[in-house]
Image (cartoon, rainbow, N blue to C red; front, side):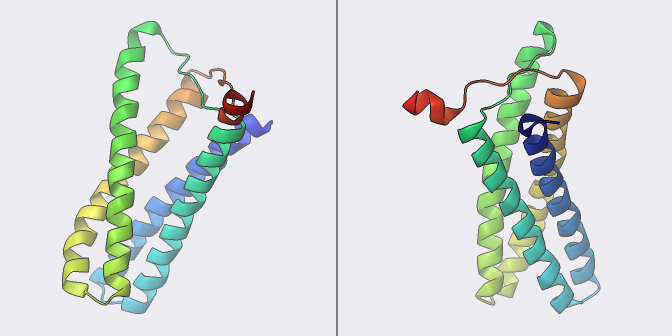
Length: 153
């Protein structure tokens, strides 16, 4: 197994772990276990941050993967990917806002933002795992030139 194969698997694992932790954190706060909720949600944020660091590193040093499925699915895949990227970006901003509200002890706002953020994050995780499955399991494709090579080539 090469770095090309390992990076996507590890990064997708981190995003999946973050989603599972958010679900656990939500269940904990429903049970009024505030301290456990806080710890689990911080762990979820760390897992999501690990995903982001690995994803950016892979993009810079290895490159992005091109869709290698049937031409008839390419447009559908690209629209789905654009939806995932937009959703992930918005969810990340909401996540940072939700965490900031918690750290500032603005719990009324945190509760309102948290529900929306968690639902967006679940959708982000599902679409992210779907992208991984399409790119690396269903239709394994080649990768493009690393960004660092494209810039400094």
